[in-house]
Image (tube, rainbow, N blue to C red; front, side, top):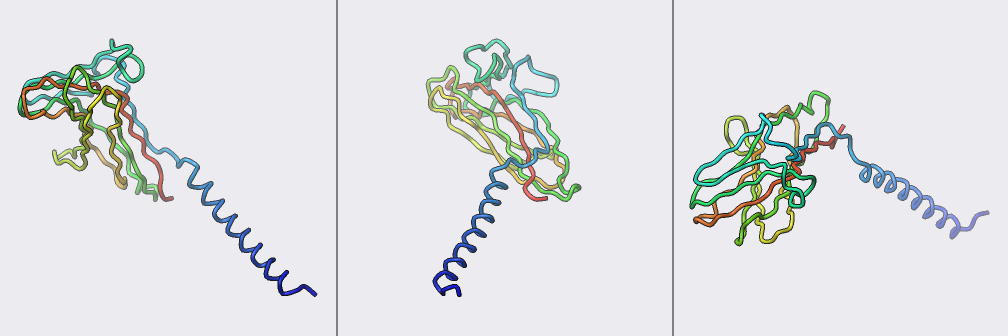
Length: 197
């Protein structure tokens, strides 16, 4: 006959084994990357393509350069945004399309980001990322203040359901004075993944 103490230990051991199996399964599921549904990247490694545009209000400039070896984050290409008037902005932007997750019985999460580095500026510079609806309304925006010469990630995340068209806009807002400020933009990426199936 099995003693009460042995039965208690057997019960505890069984429960611990079940917990380890369940939590181990969760760990495997959460550690494994979800299926990528949609990706886009722009490394700025060539001259400005026709699907990307420049915007300027005030005084400044925007150019894509493939001749920034040693200055670009990767490769030799980056976008250079400069502004030097009290109001307005300088930008480069394009339109992206994400397919519907709903049609497949899924929903997901998307992240979009680029890297920015202060360029030819002795004062802090603001690097902005804007996601804009086709009607012109902003549905997400984020700013990063660049205070040194390090590359800084400027990114936004959002839940994705139905199909979506939107403008992705990299912006250098006016510093509010006539200081000549600028930054390099490089390595823009969009990545969407399944959250629920």
